[in-house]
Length: 100
Image 1 (cartoon, rainbow, N blue to C red):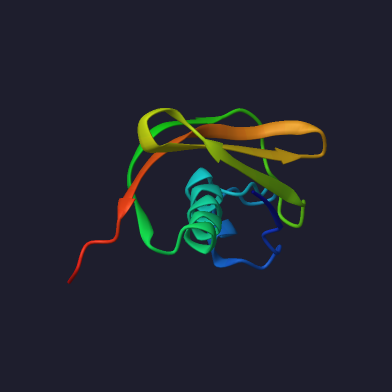
Image 2: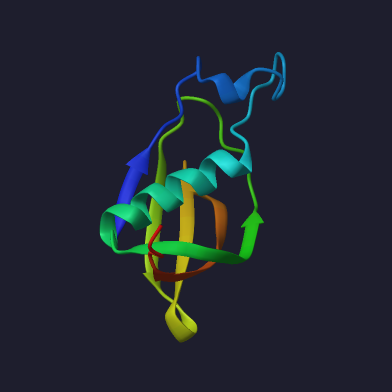
């Protein structure tokens, strides 16, 4: 599964991250990965992040493509690409949503 996103330059996460040289925080990238996973597997939630590597800077307004693929033992692998660069990659363990 693939999906694109871009964080607008006026997004609140960019205040102070970093003044005059804004970059999208890794947690915001992971949030976009989680949102895509929720669309693909609405009955599942992320149980834990097994691995997450941030390899390049994502700038506000830059289009980033998320790619999800099956991983080992029920995990989901992700890669995020922008401008021909690998921005982030990792693996998430997913499981059924727990009742409240």
